[in-house]
Image (cartoon, rainbow, N blue to C red):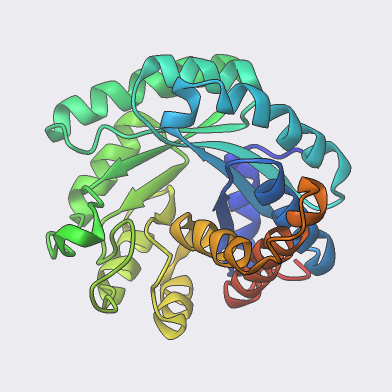
Length: 274
């Protein structure tokens, strides 16, 4: 069932769980998540990175996602992740996304608000809801910043932009961590109570399970998994018998690995049977 971003995150807020958002890249990663959603009955979000909307990848993978959304009996959203600008947002509209993220977090607060509000206004004309980011979530290889998103800035940002979801800096980063992060759980609780948008945790790959569960309890309603989707797929692909030449047969094991990974995260976030 097709849901927009706000609708699917509203389910998480009502049920006290987080909706898993899986970055997908091809048929196999999409199908792995589809099978996980079928087995668990969980709401899920399919995401694609902004750069895929700058190539033909999003154009060809999007119809696969849309077919999955129409086939699954559970709530499903299709989301642009870390939209770099208006061209990527417009392509996401065109390809059927039900949610978009515009990431202007590297800009000063006033400019971030202006850029994000512009996208919210465009998206509202399409019946699409928007995620913004406040407090840059950087790369794990560069270390994890302790410059967390401020509650007063978040309240202003949400009020002036109208976003339904807000990615915040609370101790995570993108990619593989040099050491396991420690999340700013009290700041998450303050942000959850201090503004109206649903909180999003980026850089979920590699965060210890107990930290993830504590973050959900504190108010996180969407958690992104990208790096670990890639790793589950690639690790399995490297183990496939090299004598298998038919690609449909070769891809069965990597697809199953993505499914198993997705199921583990769905259950971790408390989204199963919701």
